[in-house]
Length: 473
Ligand SMILES: [Zn+2]
Ligand SMILES: [Zn+2]
Ligand SMILES: [Zn+2]
Image (tube, rainbow, N blue to C red; front, side, top):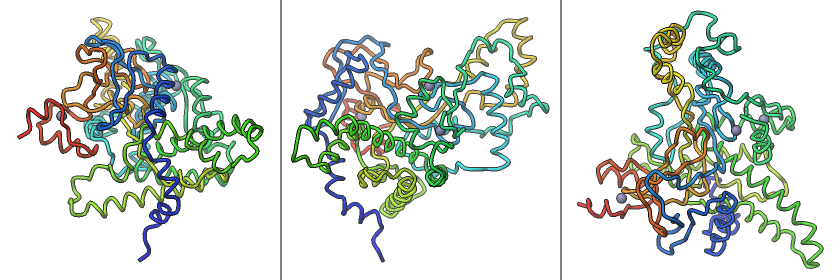
């Protein structure tokens, strides 16, 4: 039997791949995080490398309980395929857009369409993150048995703005800005988010009329495959597109200078070092290759692990072949396409203003409450439990990804009322002194010892935090 194709690429480009995947030197690491932190005005923390434990985030000043430790912008992120039915959000910052009425009308309309067509999203469950389980509980459309449909025409008038719900003006949302590439697939909260997304990755991934027809067709195949298998491939595509566009920009800025300065200039070598530079944000967050860190599904016996890993590796390879056909750039190195997702990804969660709206109505006092509920109660009955579905996805955060795990963490990811977009917000759980490492828990830290260790095995380590040492049998 022929060896799986991915192995031949691994060996053909092994030098470049190992350069792309090799851990950065501590000098590079210091420079990179120094620049990153100063660009985000975060003087409160720093990133340091420990020879034994790798990178970690440390307090550069003392924090009190409840203090904001870090607001980490999304480097790349995607909304889960299923979640796109329930939540209408900006494709760049993941803020909810439109209006309360549009959010509700669109969700009811798309759930109906989805139930009758059963299109698209049949994700296989193989995410590397354990929090996945908890997020799936608030997933889409599961509570249909308790739902009472609205009278004909109500969903339409919610969507077209004819029906205005009481007090909805208390929850204003930005007007949706469509992608100017004309794909009709993505919307934004503002022209600046649209521009930033176009500049950073969407110009390569847009399927609108501005893109070449052959590329569009190839892209659609790639997206279909990702939706049918795992939408982490869409995140990988964004990371790769971002790298290509960064690379092109670096090249355009650098090329003339280099040629002028150096007669014996080796363009191949130079291009590869620019590529490494463009790839830097990803390489800084690199942990392991995706197919090696995906948790083994419960219904797969551990003796079949090797064949499972080979299967998902082939899936990743197939996905990247499709992507390569779509956005392959001749001057761009082959080997980047070989690796789908090996950065440390986190859940992306943004609370829903629709949930806030119904809670607000519930908190009103009579007679206002009674009056409002005449209109809102049937809508709530039609939504069932889905009224509270939050925006969910996967993202790579450059700084949060450096935070190490502890089962007795001193900080946690927590969205405050004012945090309305996809940024990661880290809050101190207790006072933290200057120089102390800032830790978060990757798993539910209240689980018993064995379950914690089993969950953490997916992240590739055995926890030796004070709590684990104490509870070790
Ligand atoms: Zn936005
Ligand atoms: Zn587009
Ligand atoms: Zn522990």
